[in-house]
Each structure stands twice: as structure tokens, then as C-alpha cells.
Length: 626
Image (cartoon, rainbow, N blue to C red; front, side, top):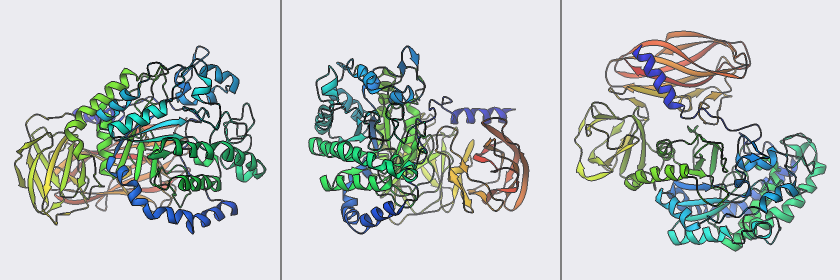
């Protein structure tokens, strides 16, 4: 019974949020253009053989500040922040910034919101100080979101904050000045492919009958290939509004970074054309990966993972994740699903461990103030970063193997141990480090060295304080000898209570696998359609032990079959999978006790038969110490 309780506690802990505020159409999983036409291929070749290749010559210099910064503030703020998810006295579920689309509001009626928008509590200096105090080193704000409304005095379109609201100030200029004063990099989110007010832009299919909207009047995603006759309209929007406003933002505010979204609403050729205009206007501005990306090539300076992640699927190179404090990016008065600061502290460490950045979103209110719940999250993160920021800034993807108690971050000469699961006996076992360790100490108290001894050829035992200095994430620093080498095999510490082996961290054997978006309870592997595909985890334990083994997975209406779980080539268990009656079911199978001898082991999930479209979507294996 006690192990069942432990399993339940772990699973509940993994699901910090059960609220899924997203509704259909709020976001898209694949933020890229699929295989293109001759038009797209011609634009790709021209870029690869010309201006884009030239622009990449200073790529490393251009993004160095971004790579070192690791942590930024994302801000979704617009006139939609005033209703805050409410329309005509009703709650509108999901993303607050999508109000116009979800309620199919005509431009003249949407302007009524603008005519009431007067955020007198807006204080750029306070916003920037809050970001800096939280340990954030760059700030990105919505200069224009999908509603097409410019939050600055644009000369391109009068659909802007100065022309249409009682608030006659320029909040973008004030934020840019405050960032410069406080040493933060500054930039804009600009919706280049969606614009719900422009009669020629994709997205608005309720007032203008344009392509790219929810009604899919012209085929939805990929409309430009099905209906090329409509492309001239979209080009007109790009030429008359999107490119002029982006260039206007560059010349007016000199941003350090530009952030784009939903590129598949325009053809690849148009996205390439927009990036070329940006590079002509400013060759040094950093551009995220959601402006121009095909299945094979990312023309941006770095990649973006899915929205609102709780876990990170495998990604290499420069990348950034965009969590948000609750489940809406723009302010939504009804969304009270705010995560604790601890969630973001661990998420930030996990991103840095894999070489990524975290751009954490808040949605300020329509009066210009920041929700007190967001303020408290920022303060909590800041308190931890004050003591432990060194373990985040300037780090690269860790060379150390996965550990059962948390994650590790790395910079030359130092390995930072982020201890999420503090050992009850105070003994922290660290595996896979071959070489000398000069000194060990808590990052929150660098004056006192910790006792460390060898626990094997490449394993170490550190004596920690009896009580965790930080119950969310205690950081231990290992100063390494030059030439230290690292093992690649996951290490299970002998005193670990629980070892989580995520599907995201598994070896995927066979072609066709994909990944879930990493949101709460969506950190699965999918595309499991062939009996030849297997999933495996290899790990090492340095002493004999008995564990309870459980498999957590999802089945949908198209799932079904049988599978077996193998340990070191021998069958442990077999399972039968029934399709969900409706939607998806998240299930846990208790495989039973497993006796593991000291050494290296491999657990494999192997299909026996697949009776439906896919076998299942595995989330993780849990090893729980008996």
C-alpha cells in the first residue's frame, strides 16, 4: 500500500496543472511550413545561395547575448487585456489575446474596446524592475498581436494605441528606455502572418471571408497551395502592413530581438521575403525560429519548442521555451491556474541543462498593472535567482549523464547539481564523472566546502546539510579538474526514492516516432505504429536494489495492441491495450517488483501486436525504491 501511495504522490506532483485552458484554434503544434511549391523552393534556393548565407556569417556574434542570458520575460499585452477573457458578460475560455477571433468580433465593435483602453497604472520602470529582480535578462512584448492592433504610434496604420485609445503615450518607447536603463535586452513580438483587422490578411474569415481562419473556407493550413489565386491579397497585406511595420519597429526602437509566430498561415516564400527585409534593415537583430522554418531548414537564429511546456522534448542547438504563469498568455480574469514559483525554478534549470532558454510569459491587466499572482511568482523566482543565478547564466548543455535526483548545468570548470529530490539521509550520490574534483560547496554559501569522497571509479558521495537549504532546488557546485570526462549512461543513486525515466529521454529505435508538445501530461512519444519500433532506457545502479516498476501512458480511440516489457533481454511483463471509449485516457500499469543487480541495465518496451492505428503513447517509466 505504501508504494501505491508513493506512486500516486509522484503522479500528482507531475501534474501541477490539470486545467487545460487551451481551446480549439488557440495554437498550433507545428509552427513551420511543410514541403513547398516551386515558388517556395525558388525562394529557399535564392536565400541559401545569397542573402541568408551572408547574414549567417555573424550568427554566433549576433546571438551570444541571447545564449548567455538564458532567462527572459515574455509579455502579452494589448487592448484584449481590458476585457480579460470576458465578452458581453460571458466568460470566453482559453487565450485572452484570442478574444476577437473566438467571438468573431467585427473591427468596428473591437474598436469600442480600444476607445475604452486607458491603462493609467502602466509603469514601464516597474515592469522592467520586476523582470530584472526575477533574474530575467531580456524582455519581449507584443507590439502587434493577431488582432492587428499596434501598441505603439504606427505611421503605417491608424489601428494603433495613439490613434484609437485615450492613452496617448507610447508604452513601447517607455519600455525600451527602461530596459536600456536597467541593462536588459529588449524586443518585440509581431504577428506577421495573422492579422484580424486587415481585409487582405489571413485569419479573419467572419468579416472578410479570408483564408487561414477557423472556418477553413479555403482549406485551412496550406490554403495558399490550394487557392493560389488568393495569394495576391496576402502579398498586398505583407507589402502594405507587415513589412512596413516591422521595419518601422526596427528603425524607431532598435530592438535586440524580434519574435514571430504562426508562420504556416503564410507561404514559405512570403516568410522568407519578410526575413530578407529584416536582415536589410538590421543585420544584427536576433530573430526567433517561428518566422521562417520548413521541415528541413530553420532560417531563424534559434528554435522554439511548443507553447506552455512542462517537459522538453529532445532538441539540439540554440532553443527557447515559452511557458506562461497560468494557461493564457494574455490576461484572463477567469484563469486562476497559476503555477507556483517552484515550477518555473525547476523548469528553468531543466531548460538550461539541455542548452535552452526560458522566455516566461506574464499577461498584465488592462489598467496597466501586473496581477498580484504574477508578481508573487516573479518574486519567488527572483529570491532563488539571487543566490543561484550563476548556475543558469552562461551555461551550455550539460555533458553529465542524467541523475535521479534532479538535473545538472555546466560551464567550463564547473558542474552545478540542481537537487530537486533532496536525499533524506543527506548523502548526495553523483554518477558519471571521471576525473578530479577540486572543491564542492553550496552555491548559496560559497564559504563552506562540503565533504566529498569517491563512491566508485566515476561516482561520488557528497555530504549535504541534514535539512535542505532550498526545498525547491538546492544547488551544489563541483569545481572540476581540467580534463574531466563524463559518462553517458543515466545514473540511479542508491538512496533515490523515485527515478523518473521520461519517454522524452528514451532511445527510440526505428523510424516514424514523434513527440507530444511537452505540456502537462503530454510529454509522450507518439507515432508508434510498427511492430519493429521499440523504446528503451539504459541506466546504471552501483548496488543491488529492489524497485517497484510502473509504466505511465496514454491511449486514444485509435490505440490498441499488446506489448511486453523486457529487462536485459528477459521478459518482465506483458500488457494489453484497449482503445479509449472517448478522447484519451491516461493510465498507469504497475509492472511489479524488479530486482536489479549492480551494473548497467536496459529496459525495453516492445510491441507484440498493434491492432489499431497506433500502439500507445508512453509518458514515462517509474522506478520506486522498495
